[in-house]
Image (cartoon, rainbow, N blue to C red):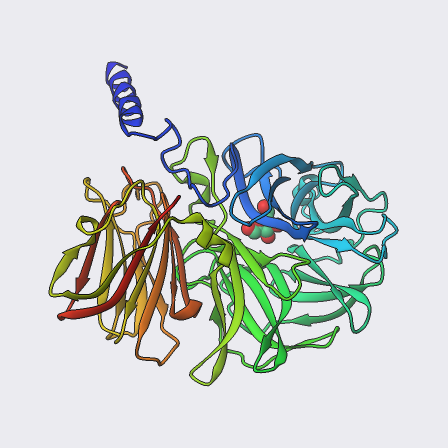
Length: 495
Ligand code: FRU
């Protein structure tokens, strides 16, 4: 008992002893959305309307672990400063509210009013699941006529009953102009099923995709379908999250590029491709109603350990919003993601170091003014050579981000990043192949207290990972295997 009191006193002392850190908030991200309190997982119903981005999210307001799901709500006018709003959707007699999407019904096809915001989500009924009929997930809708503040559930729910598929969830809906119909992309166990509807209320099955394609290490979840321009024409991209079975263990999101005609998706290529090679970008989808822009956000965690990460008041955050593009590498199209341009406003003036010769290691923190573990670094090399950036602190916690020439891949190693013992798979190195054949190498790295997002070669190779250090990672060591010429390092501190 005495020892416990001592330990508690010591840890509260530590919490107050770190300047600027509120007790219990040590790992709170500062420029990523995280709920004020309690549990969150997938981003849901992301939609842009009247100058505001709405982010709904899987939320359990009764605790800091996964529980009966609600849709939490946050709003932002710039994608970077989020204000949490009252809970949007509560469980009801049909079930808890699982993941889904939101659209603006401009033509009032559903009869809920012109420009009604309509949420399309999965009901998960625990009682039916306990009865093991396999019919416990079905799709429902709700609408809001006041920009997402208050919601009315549709009386005719469910709009898409379960046909006998255990995993039947996460509807992503869009307007398909050619056939003037809504298209729903739904995860149905080991595949994606497309449905169409004139009014969001009655749905007709169009086709299935993927039972024999892509990665199948786990159940398929949270799909998204959208088009992007590529070499003067439009290509369709299908995102599918899978858990487990990701390239770095546990949860991850794969994608396919191909064509969609309103009924069927035909892939150009059947190799498995990943949106992000880190361990912590899951269930990501894109915003509705953003015109030509495709803005993606994911849940910055992994089902392997999301319920046990060492935060006290809340659990999890979203990734930085990313703009998606198709880029050519090696003669093929790849999905590239980069932080949205709005994120540059978050950071102060760049401190730049040009033409730096590195023979061994350089402590960049001696050359830069760093503080608080919240920054953006851009590293440019004229030639792709082995290079590593060690983000570290006085306690020796470290996250190492680098490029390995022998394997032609980027990596993030959080094996010794602080608290790693809460789950056996957490301490690990994640690896992202390099896709471009270009000689020069660029990495943009965003660090926000407890996360690192690496965007290499214009977003062709991406890795997102979380970590839990004892103090901010404010020491920065740059190391080369051979004597190295760095073209430019640019560092900006969170404003
Ligand atoms: C993905 C997921 C979804 C589901 C939700 C439940 O992380 O499992 O398939 O709708 O989380 O919270």
